[in-house]
Image (cartoon, rainbow, N blue to C red):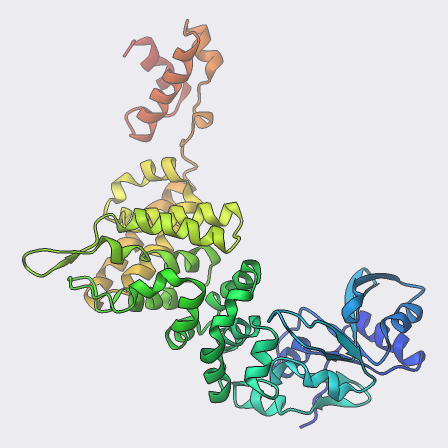
Length: 443
C-alpha cells in the first residue's frame, strides 16, 4: 500500500537541511500514524542519522534549543515552528521503569523504530523511502489493533506509562488491545506506582475524553483501580432502589460513556459516586439509600484530583459539580433565576450535562427525567437572553443613589443586597424608579 504523507513546510525544510548535510531524516511516530488514518497530525517529530552535535552544526543558521541533548533531542525553530529532531538511538537499561539510564546513537533507522512503544507508532516516512514499517504498524491500523513492538513485558518494564498510553490509544482511536499486550498490561499494572502523578493524569484525561472511554473503563477496571484505589470499594456494591440497574462502579462507567466529551463533565462522572459505598444504608424493606454521598464523593474527589496534580480551577469546578450533582435543580424550573444568581449560567449548563449523564446511566424508567432537564434548560436560556439582574452591579441604583437618600456605612451594602434579593424574586422591577420608590416607602 503506497501512502503519500503531506509533510508541513517547516518539517520539509528541516529534512532538506539534514539531507543536504548527508544525513537521513524521517518524520516519525504519531504524525505518521495520524496521517495514514486520514487525520490531521498536530505534532510533527523527526528522527535522523545525525548525532546531536551534527544536528546542531547542520542548523547553525537556525535557532536551536538543546531540549534533551543527553537523549539525542534538539528542538529547531523553523518559521517560528518548533520541531523536535532526535538522533536514531538504542535505549539502554530502564532501572526506574520511566526512562533509559543511557542511550547509544546509531545510524540505523531499524534500531530506532525497534525501541518504540506500539507498532502503530513505530513507523517513519520521507518522500524518498516512503513508509518505513518494519513491525506491522500499517496492518495493525487496518485491523484497529494496539500491539507492543516486540515483547510487551519488556516494553512496559522500560516505561510503565506505556500501560496508560495503551489504554488511552485504545479509547481515543477506538482500537482493541491485542491479547498478548492486554495480558502484559494486567501483569505489569503495579509498575504504575513508579510513574509521576502528572504523567498519569495526562493519559487518564485523554482516555476519559476518548470515544471508547466506557469500554476501556470496563475492560481495564483493574488498571484504573491501580491508579485510583478508592474505586475498588465501588465494584460489586449493589444499588437496590428504583433508580438503578447497575452496581456503583457499573453506573460510574455508564455515566462516563453517555456524558458529553468535556473535561469537567467526564471527571465529574468518573468521581461523582465514589463515596457511595461508605454511605450505603438499607431500610426495613430492603431498599438501599446513599444519603450524603454527594458531599463525601466531593471530598474524596478533592483529594484524588490533588494527588493527580490537577490545577485549582479543575479541582474547584469538578468538586462543585459533584457536590451538587444530586440536587436535581431540574425539578424546580420556577427557581431558575435564583439558581442563576447563586451559581452562574456556565456552572448550571455544566450541571445539566452531569444530570443528563446521571439519568441516562440509571434505569430506563428514569429517562423521562430528560424532559425535565430540557424544560429547565429552555427556561435557563430564556433567562440568559433577557440579560437579567443577578448581581448588585446589575442593579439600576448604586451606592451613590443610596447615600443621596441618607443611607450610611454598612447599611448601604445591606440595602443593595436586599434590593437584589427582591429583584431576583420578581418582587420589584429592576428600574431606578421602582427601586427608589421602594426605598422611599421605607419598607
